Amino acid sequence: MRIAVIGGGISGMLSWYLLQQEHQVTLFEANDYLGGHTATVEVEVAGQSYAIDTGFIVFNDWTYPVFNKFIGELGVEKLDTEMSFSVKNLKQNLEYNGNTFASLFAQKRNILRPSFWRMLADIVRFNKLGKQLVAADHPDLDLKLGEFLQKYKFGKGMRDNYLLPMGAAIWSAGLTEMPSFPVRFFLRFFNNHGLLNLADRPQWAVIKGGSKRYVDALLNKVGTHNLRLSQQISSVVRNEQGVIIHFANGTTEQFDKVVFACHSDQALALLGNNATTDEQTILGAIAYQQNEVVLHTDTRLLPQRRAAWASWNYNLDATERSRATLTYNMNILQRLQAPVTFCVTLNNSTAIATDKILGSYRYAHPVYNMMTMAAQLKRNLINGQNHSYFCGAYWYNGFHEDGARSAVDVAAMFGIQY
Image (tube, rainbow, N blue to C red; front, top):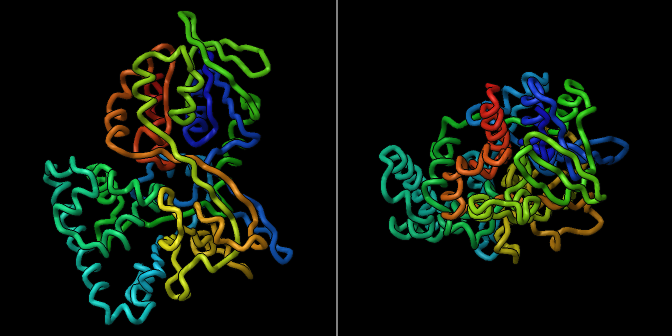
């Protein structure tokens, strides 16, 4: 069969890789590069070149089985990394890094601060309770996160200085959105990733030399003759014979099947009036949110105390509340030896010194709420119907593995197991 895959992120790349084993597959990408959120930027400092990841950065040995298998087949080398998390709240004169006992009390006054000890006690109680409720499939998992924290009387310190920033950092969401997160979704993710454990957590890793290395390895393995970059598709029309792709330049191409490996809202826009009622309802219920990403070297966005610097650093002092405001310390994450500290900051560009900015980008992430979870359960109503298949991280937890997993789901519908 002739199959069109629309979208060159992890979902599209893995769909292309798997489906072409038995079919003639063409991958269409709107950007002039392949990779989507796999976006490594080459920068030069003091005569030395560095490859800095600005989108997809980390994965682990517990919950990324498909992606680990994929890069293993491509022969890509990975590096173990540290996944630590800090919070800075200057209004409360508070900062901490939860990685070690020493970094937890990098701000010495935390030792004598009763509110800090209450926060730690609440974290331990939340972890224990979360495990119990997940194991019992408790009805309270159907609450929203804000309702859950209130019902079980968790303190404001734990809520505002730990749990909501942690969730916002993980899902690139806003603090204002987090209280509406479904508890079942939230706790299931935390439990699966070992975040409810004080110890026994997965080993996190990065791609050695930048995440783009696995994209390069893919192209070296499969070639580029069925890859079409900078493709502006205006619409997709299905009929009894198959699929017609209409391009912005007025040309059309016919395929037997189409795989929408783009975001849910993008797929719906391409279908336009040709979308079925189920497609409109299901894809329309899964929204995406834009996040501004800045690569820079301004360490003022990290905690004041170097001992509190972490891989992920949440800044509660930023005025933006509807978007995540955190800074990744790329020297820690990518194990870089450099004369400067490379930082990647979300949604806090006005706080960054302009002479330290190396690049600005925008990436969209799925929004998770009750509507999203309900729509995820109805994927079978549209997947494989009307010669069309839908894959993307939005069907699961929104991460790289989820995009890869959804591509495997689509390949299985064509009889290709992975």
